[in-house]
Length: 535
Ligand SMILES: O=P(O)(O)OC[C@H]1O[C@H](O)[C@H](O)[C@@H](O)[C@@H]1O
Image 1 (cartoon, protein in one colour):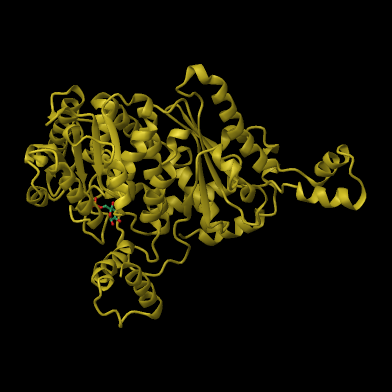
Image 2: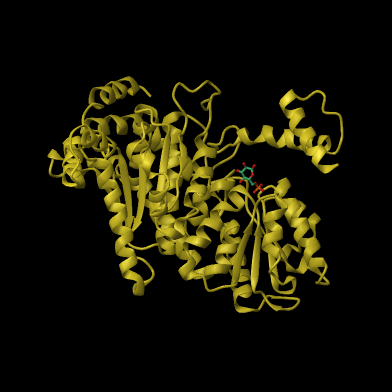
């Protein structure tokens, strides 16, 4: 980060400037915008100017982005703390690509597993694979984290293409989740997919056993209606799932990057192999763009650099992801794992304390719902929240085009409002029109002032098709990668989730009465509250 100080100086020197001033340049809207295969990322409503952009791009270059990008795509062991390559891009690479891991081309096996998964999905959809009571009507995907969020988010996103059996996603170990899901299902026509990279995750294994017991009550051979997706083939066999319904993947696919392979089985069953292939094609188009576009016209690179400008340079701690697309309702949750599990780290690749903040807190809700909830703070709160809007130019409901026009108008209006705000003079004029005068006019006007000058970006795309969803998810994956490279961290491990897991395992027996006296007083009090309720 050799030019970090220069960038920080530039940020300080320009922070008093109103973003609107930058539009004195009539070409700004085009010049601060990136296009990729029909998608447009507009970052002109930020305080980044040409100098800032050039410095940001140089920072990415100096961090070795170009070489590190090549290293990822070609299978180098860039996940150093786990000694692994990072090759989710191979899951969507063109068929004739050659990618070697430890001297062996991994592509033929990937293609073979994908073909098996497609064939199984098509069999389920066509009623060739049946339950013990007939064709499959419902599929329950049991998984958590990366084995849930990706396929669950994508299944909802692609609802207009969903013509297979109903899909249900169960993740939480809270019995409420599986109980509520199973209560209306018929065990004789339900397929259960147990999705777990490790096949040891306590939530998933607990839910999987509960589902098997539920099925065993009505079905002679419950195992016959189970499929599994995992890297641990010994453990899937131990669980009793026949190998023809087990779809493996390698450890160089990170959990939160795994939707492109067999972890996407639920989505394959929902939308079919052809639709899934389109989803992969969209991500592949984004890979090609990421690999080839010059850095300042490279969508994932610019998305990442805008994020770094806002978080590490301006000091805005959070980022709101605001899809004006109801079917992307789970995108914020998906991105919370993708971005926060990847870049929420406190040390760099070599274990040294980070000199900057790590990745931001990511949150959000679909528009327009958020407007009637938390946008108050976004517009008038004392904290600045950079907003990332996502918007489809076209919806899937031609008969409801008037709804879509309202949706689009709201999205674009929000970014406009954040930019321009409303001055005290304008607010006074509004109050005067209402007949207010003097001190009361002044007081009321002050509540109606919007400072404006609040940054936002807009990602606009033609329509949320499988291809476009693939592009969007590929875009965010690469954004996380670029951010990780610039910050010098490993975006592909997740040691921060381990301590809680270990303590939870140790804590279980204490809830049943074992001695808790070595716990801190707060923990002891919580345990005894639970024990008292159980007695
Ligand atoms: O797929 P699994 O092995 O069951 O893992 C599920 C999830 O749990 C872990 O705790 C990790 O934090 C996630 O990255 C992972 O996606």
